[in-house]
Length: 186
Image 1 (cartoon, rainbow, N blue to C red):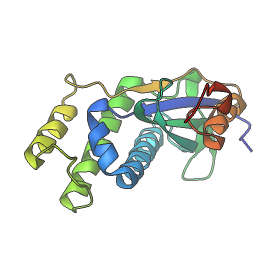
Image 2 (cartoon, rainbow, N blue to C red):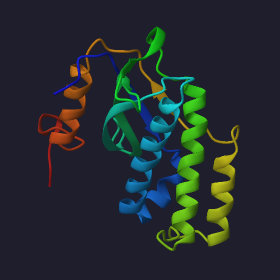
Image 3 (tube, rainbow, N blue to C red):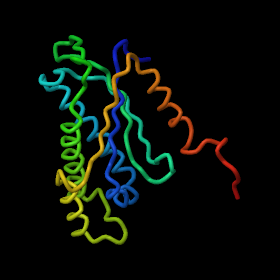
């Protein structure tokens, strides 16, 4: 069931340089990704400058691309409004959810901070073939705003979210490739 409001499809993608860390720490990295995305959207949309309310968010993890290579990213269906602390509904103004550049910067900061904290707590293992210092150098480079692009895509608003929910449901129900696409197997 969806709220009777506009919805936005927002996609958060991890840089491919993090793929080895992802593969070595799938459960922890999955949790960190969901938390960083939730915190990014929640923090920005709670700011009165953007919305001043808490939105509804439905998120689905995809770990592959259309060509079936590792590509961790989160699809989010975000309500075009939210509840204020007083319990009032506030709609997104002018059909514009958030500026993508701001979302990218906040997401980058929150995800890298979460990775560093997990690293400090000993929750992450170093990917095979990397030394700890190389891992720290990578995180520092990924934190630089011009060295690595953190992709966040905010699609145009939908008058309803049913199309996005249907799209996400196909991925949640099946695997990365449908049976009809299989030519042969051994």
